[in-house]
Each structure stands twice: as structure tokens, then as C-alpha cells.
Image (tube, rainbow, N blue to C red; front, side):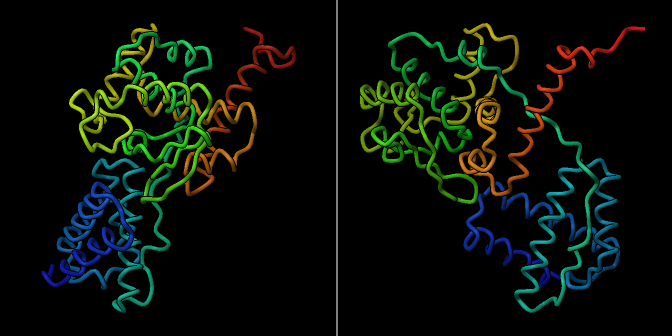
Length: 301
């Protein structure tokens, strides 16, 4: 492909970082996917991105699938291509988007893992007054109390938590901020941590949660600490930070069915993402029904 064509792709990637404020990780994924599209164009004698037609992009998706790429990854790849084509339309290179009607293979929707309320209660029974223990108790309570992603919890600064108001200001995907309630157990645990945090934190460090080195705690450290406390609680399964978020959403919907409110607390852009937790709840109800209702029981042959 003509180097000038790839220069257009580079401008698009710069646009993503500067104007849409996407993360470095997401920008790298876009670069990788556009690189695959450029290779496809080269192999099939397509001289520029502007020459691409819908049937060629469908072939691009089909070859990706035949090459072993998962349906979800193909969806992401096509989404990146469509965004690039929209950019070319904006720049006057294209008049219409050839990727608009191109669909990826259907993805089997997997229900998220969760802990039940008893398991979560066992996990959060963290005793001890050592600095690491006090910090970990605050982190785990906040994970479950507010449904935070790992990156969101790590990114919290001291000024993001308002214990008097019972809220936390979270910066989520796409640098979007939201205000989320913080429950009383989490507030108490955070207050205990704040009382001793300065003994562990380096001078001028703004992070709410810090490592033993006094700097902002790392994702790996949080993952390890979650795993450690799960083992101490005797939970018979792998426990990871995102499991708190899944459990938070599921337990809220089981109690309230306030789907739109849970969507806002989780920071989901699309409510269909939140709806998967209602499917999980229905699955639980169906299991209860099958076990308990006289007309639902299946007689063994």
C-alpha cells in the first residue's frame, strides 16, 4: 500500500489519542487492526483504503474468522474499521461508510461469574491492624460497595473520595467521570486507612491506595492481595478484582431491579451491557423454580 495511505491511518490514530482521548492500549489495538486491513489490501490488489467496498470488508471479516480470530475480536476489528471510515468521511476522502453493513460472527454471550452474598461476606471479614491489612480491607470493601473496575480503583486520588457525602468520583473508560455511592462499611474501612495512610505514602503522592514503596499501588499487587484474602477465606474458586464488580451488579439487581440506576453506577455506555446481569438473575430464578415448583420437576425415566 502507498505509504501516503498509511499516513492517513497515522493521522486517524493521532486523532483517537488527542480528540477522543482513548487509552494507549485501545490506540494500539486500533493500530494493529488497521495494519491487518492494510495487509489485506496489499494481498488483494486494493491500492488505498478509499477503494474498499462492503463485499471486500465482509471477505476481510470472513478471512479473520477462518484464521482463528474469535468473533468478539472480529467485532472489535470491524468497529475500528468503521471508525476509521467515519474519519475518512469527515476528511472528505469518502462519501459513505463501506463498513456500515458488515457484521461479525455472532458472539455467544457468556454470563459473568459472581460470588453469592455469603461468600462475599466471608471474603470481607478481614481482621488485623497492620497497614497492608487495613489498606486491603478498604480496597476490597470499596470494590464491592461501588462496583469499581480495577483501573478505576487504582486511579483514585485522595480528593476523589467524599466520606461525609458518602460518594466517590470515578474516572472510567474514555476518561468519563461518574459519582458513585460508597456504603457505610466501605466508608468506615476507608476512614481507618486514611488515618494511617501517610505513614506509608511518599511525600506528595496523591493516590488513595499506595504500595509498600509509598507510590500508587499497581494492578498486579491488587490482584495478588485479592487472591491472598480469598485463599485466607477458604473460597473454593479463583477470585479476581472484576468479580467484585459482577457481584455488586448482580446483588443490586436481585434486590432492586433498578436497571438504569445500576447502569449509571457501573458507567456502562449501553444499557444492553448491564442487561446481562438480569439474564444472570433470571438464570438463578429458573434454577430455583425447577427445584421448587411441583409442576417444574422433571421425572427421571
